[in-house]
Image (cartoon, rainbow, N blue to C red):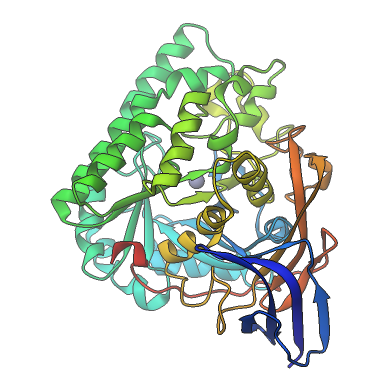
Length: 463
Ligand SMILES: [Zn+2]
């Protein structure tokens, strides 16, 4: 086994930081300390750089279909690694008439194994809550997929879940340590508002914003939390985007309920004015829930600092603008929902969080790696720089400024959500289970380098 010693970097953990060394032995971290006096095959000088755990993106879509279009797949997962994310968790829709595990495993064989370039895991999206499917839920644990998501949004789509499905899932899942996650938007309210906006002539991308005001998210968030209370189950709210939804989560937490949630990079840094861009450019920013305003952004940063929400994901959706997004050129309801961001998560959090004084470096490590690891049940081998853990390590060079451009993105789509924004520092090196996969900011890994990672039930946030 080859040994690599990373020397003199500033090692950042969720609680402290210090100039020190990390010894990698094969795929694992063998030692972390100060002035490690050990032999190694290779020594890397990380002076002036920050040493962070590889990121965990608990919310990505490598095969999300919407109105006949589909996002780019695992063949673009090197974009994650290039941006410092070494593990991604993909959402797999249960296929009609198939079981939960069968749906994941068919997907895995066809679309991920031997292709993925980051380590990977899966959340199942329950779309067909037949009694046999509800009964199958406990077996997700042994299969290593102990999380499931339900979509309260998207009326009329096959993946929409009603309250009955959610309550049944919560009741079944809690006894075996499975975390239920929900996309919280009131599907009926969105449907009515969409129709009204179309009737008023708002067919353009901004109609999406007008049809998804914060209250549709807040209402569904409150309802999901109440359903979890009825089931006496924990619940996780994906992509919290607004003050009102955040308040629902905060209130439940204060009352002692086991509720938590995430937000996403774009909700922290972009706003709804992007959807008003002319010449259909606004379609690039159509994602659900919709982008908000500066007031909501600041509330989200505050929510992260208070721990009301505990992770920042990308909700990466690699839809092309020229083709996929144009399906909705005459009607915003047909614009595929989602935006790319897989590669930008760390640098954007660094620049607009740490450098802007909104979060500490410790908090960044927590939101980017440690909490997602705990949420997902990966914290026994991912998300921390400790001996025995997978050697997923990022060297972030904080020196220098650049402008974010799609030319540097590996996500395989024709635009970048953060185009033209300033970035401070960059991902210099990334180790994926001990192998150098990014060198001098360039991806040098290979197809199939990612490994499937089985997860354990109930992240520690619930204990
Ligand atoms: Zn999503």
